Length: 498
Image 1 (spheres, rainbow, N blue to C red):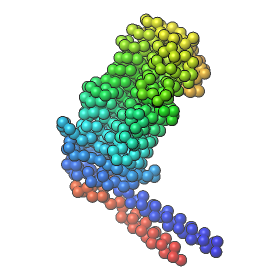
Image 2: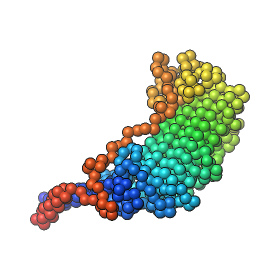
Image 3: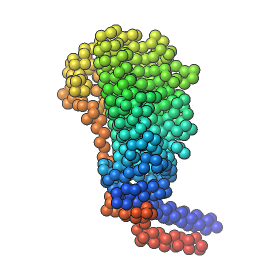
Image 4: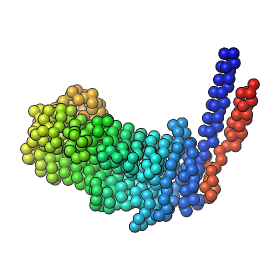
């Protein structure tokens, strides 16, 4: 009797496996060209994609009427994600003409999907997440987004949760005259949140036309969002901060590392609480290069859980101290160590009197106005030109003999084991974003090191993707594969009856 039950169970498992395989093979490939897709014929296709489906656009431009709404809900799986893509990393473009009140380029929600290799020009916002559902386990890469009316990429729909987003290797610029951030993640007062996500190797620039709200920030992560990694991004010529993160509400620290910020119209990097800020290079901010602000603190809390180490900050015409900690009473959970700070018009470092109790030391400071509340082991260095390779060319690798070399606090080595260029730090700790190595080549241009050109996953080429008819109906997979699986299913059904 037991053997018979085991046989039945084995047959059931076999049948289930064949059925699952049948469903995977049933996934479809769609291929549009400008010949059959230039009049938005693909709208029905994109709105009806199933798990495992792939929608590919050949090189060319695909205009969308400014007033035509495009909202898509995608339900892929871990083993069969939905993919929407251009045929190669460049050349496939969606566009919306200029209009006084355009729709977003795309409203997208769902889970387990990839959106990649497309140029997106125009629209109110370009990519808006979570209009009607949460978003999770999704990838946005190799997108070029420009000429939006407002924020380019947003995950800030109230009541939604955005989880495991991967936002990599995108270029965003010319974001319009409204709030106009490149990336806006989360909501005010934890009204929605983004968590466990990666924002890496993006290039955000030229948000200078922004006139309201947050004024063209590069990457903004709002209150209550947590466990996000903002790494290796290049953010230049923005109206607002390069990176702006608020209170994580003690749910998990946000990590800001290896970013290059230049000519940001406010602070370079601004944070409130729950932030790890390491290995960043900031050039020429209007306000502070790094500011720890009491803006939008969790109710009843002080500035807390902030770790700032191994950053190189160059302030030439700033209106505030180059590295600044605000007035609200802070706690011993804050650390400011091993930063190289060069400030020509304001103090290099300013801490509020109530910030005592935290750890502050081994920061190399150049200033013409005295700092407020230096750490006991902070030290004075020469000008940027005296200490760094070629700051006029944005090369901030330490010169041989620089006072920054060997002057760091090695106790944080385990927390910052690599430098801005990905090189291993040693116990002979160099202050600033780079670890000096005698005889090694210099750090090079930060924008070269953070080159945003990453080889994308090779999309399916037109040679093995069936061409979709102009109606946009679903193309069929190999009939022989489906016949084979159908026969297997019949056999399994027969076996189950024995």
